[in-house]
Amino acid sequence: MADDSFWSQALADAESADAADPLAGFRSRFRLPPGLIYLDGNSLGPAPHAALRAIADAAEREWAANLIASWNTAGWFELPTRLGDLIAPVIGAGAGEVVVSDTTTINVHKALHAGLSLRPGRSVVVAESGSFPTDIYAAQGLGAGVTLRLEGVDAPAIEQLIDESVAVVLVNQVDYRSGRRRDIAALTARVHAAGAVVIWDLCHSAGVMEVGLGAAGVDLAVGCTYKYLNGGPGSPAFVFCARRHQAKVAQPLAGWWGHARPFAFEPGFEPAPDIRRFLCGTQPILSLRGLEAGLAIAAEADLAAVRAKSVGLTGRFIALADAALGPLGVGLGSPRDPEARGSQVALTHPQGYAVVQALIARGVVGDFREPDVMRFGFAPLYLRHADVVRAARTLEQVLAARAWDDARYHARASVT
Image (cartoon, rainbow, N blue to C red):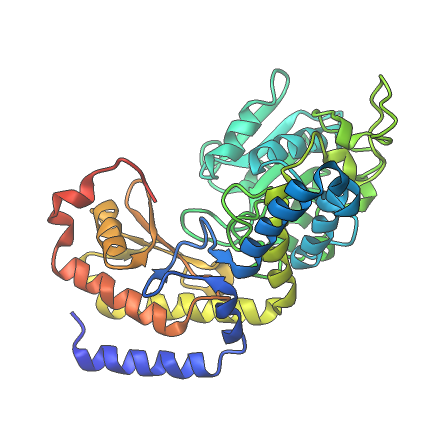
């Protein structure tokens, strides 16, 4: 174990970094339980105070008082495209290239079919075997006639699977387990060189780093809004489609919100000529109102500063783990190179689940992924460098005390 002088110096250094933090003022915009160190924003971001007010106002005034008139007076119908335009600069897209709707899983299905529609002479889809399962399930559900190739199953590197038979490559910018970060520009160029379409999953990167979809020439992308964009549990996801594809791309979920003239109520479907063709049915207005407040914060924050602080927070945590946790059986499951790392750090331990439960009981919230990954997310808008030091020290104390021996921490009624 590191001694008290080590931790005192580590905390002093962290507090100096916090004093110079240009993003420090954002922390007060979120409701965080007192004394809690929240390292799970890569699963669910905390509630912005403005989001709680917006949801209450939408429920009490727009819905309860104004009823159906709010579709027009409160602009409910335009929320998916208006919020899409709020997300666009966060991911390096242009106005009219993003729409907020449905869930990530539904949008992955839409995007995969859309990508295939752009390459009608091809039938191979490439994806990652280690991807979040919903991506793989969606690819497996494309049906007869489509061949799925998986990185880690059919070849060790995704680049080795991309040839002139491939229609679509579905890939994550940041891996949900390890936090490994891919180079969007380089892989997009490789996909395009083979004549294929690329779909980027941005669930673990949107809002915490510069993405640069437009600069990289990306075709399609999907992402969620309840992690680093702080939209609330189950808040609607988003779809990006480059403007150059919008007039000809097709997705399978035809619905009245995606119609070229939704209020004409025509018996035949004609898709909207723009990003609205990725809409389907009526959207959850209260959730959209809560999300709007989270997106306003993301739009205000300077992404370069967010990324710089993210690198500092994760780097500090890794350095502390190297110094104090290695002798206690902890390994590093994330890249050391900050350019190859997202805003999370994966540590490994044979009793990882019980260790994480013991941490939560002590006010440090991380999460666990099978088989042995203790996963910690570092959201720069509300996390402080001093929180990182206190979390690392608490983890050291849990490990030194063998807290995983406590049977209470092995019960798996739920996994955080």
